[in-house]
Structure formats: structure tokens, C-alpha cells
Image (cartoon, rainbow, N blue to C red; front, side, top):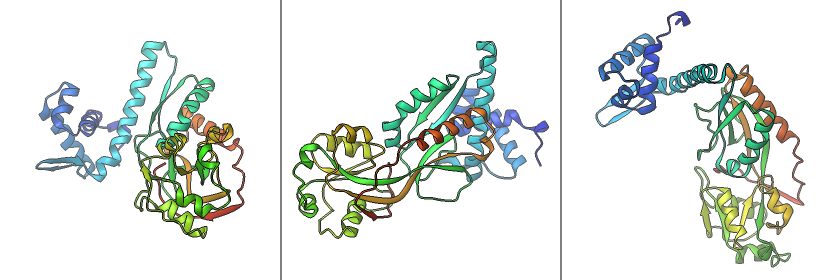
Length: 318
């Protein structure tokens, strides 16, 4: 077993630089050493671990599975050491902390600003570095804390449910005013706005809703958007009807900028989960952010139950 007394720090620095740049030349320039020195360090680390960290093929250079598992751990460790040292040097010992927080795109677009403002007001010594990749059910290895959009799943991360998604049709008041009581007729004459599905037909959500609601409507038409936020923006312009999460668009619903023409809900089976690495449970900054997020969303009132609920499994980048 590798003991911390003999940690190969120079080799780990070389590996982190190569992994970050995916180039021995760029890593050598970043560390101000020769390329051969970087190569020797990485080869020595691979020998110590008994596993290759990079795939070296003509025209291709990438991390192996072992390298991809090790890189975020090394990077995070060096980031924390660097930050702690800088705090002592520049702030006279005052501790500040930066957390890498991963949020789904629509979640980030709709909720990141109040999250930043509210959390910083109670924890001014913690800085949030927010990223929002387009992916479902995956947390970046570099993220300290991640909110993921996924079905309930078993993983190696500690996970807390923030809320389960329930989608409702929403549209501009001018569009809703002509809805009447016939949902079939309304959907047939109104442009359908779709959110992209991961691994599914782009029309999946609307197709499942109309099929399970017993409505005969052609769903393979309309506009398709990368995120729910873009679909909502188009609906706010006065055109089309989108399937949106009321928690995300509570402000537009409460002010009447968006309306729900029919009391029907699509339970997608997906939810928003807060996840962290198990080894970070004892980290004070991560623990504070985790507890604050769980409490913040637990205090939100649930969306009122509709008259008619349908269930439809689908994967969507939200």
C-alpha cells in the first residue's frame, strides 16, 4: 500500500499538468521543466501504480480509466493546498474557500443567481464556482457538489433528493385564452415546444403525455430546444405550448406571464438530486453548502396537485 510519507508529489504534479493539458509539451511549459522530466515522472507514477494513466496512440492521447479516476482527486487536492497557502500569505490567516458546484443548465439559469446571493449572505467566506454542463445523471469528477437531473439510482456518491420533477403544459396568456375546454383541439392547433431528450425521440415527452391522457394529437411537429429555459423563452414570446416544471417557472406562473391551459401533469420519474463525494462529508464548507441547499428546498411549498396526473418515463437535459 502507498503511504502518505512516500507520496510522489513531483510525479503527481507532472501527472496533473499532463492530464489538465492532455499534452506533455504544454505540461512541461506550465511547470517550467523539460518535457523529458515530465515524461519520466509520469512513467514512474505509472510504474508505482502498476497501471497506465494515459493512452498513447498515433494521433490520439487520452486518459485511461485509471487516469480519469485519479486526475480529479489530485487536482482537487492541489487546489485546496494552493488556496490554503494563499489564504495564509495574503489574508493573514483568514480562510476563504471556493467550491466547484455543478448545476443542470435550466436549474443554473433559473436558480443560480438567488443561490449565489442567498448562500453568500450567510456564508461570505465560501465562494461558489458554478458550471452547467449538458448531461443527465452524471456528476463531474471535478465538482465538489453537484445537482444532477436523474432517476433514482445507486451510485458511489452521497445523494439527497431536492424535488421530483412534475411537468405541466404552459403557454403565454394570449395562447391560453383560446384553449377552451377541448385539449385535443387546442394541442392540434398550437405549436408544440419540445425539450431535447437524451437517448430518446425529441418528441418523447409530448408523445407520452397525449398517449396516456387519451388524446389523439400528432406530436412529431413543433420546435425543439436544448433546454427547458429556451422552450419557456419561446412560449413567453407568445407562441406555442411547452411542458415545464412549475418549480422552475413559479415566478412566471404567479405573475401570469405563463399560464397552465389544462390541469394535467406529467410525472417524468426524474428528479433533482444534490450529490457529493463520500469522503467530503467531513469537509466544513461542503457540509455547510449541502445542509443549506437541503433546507432551502425543503422549505419550498410543493406544487399543488392537478386534477389529472399521467406518468411518462423519459430522459431530458434540463
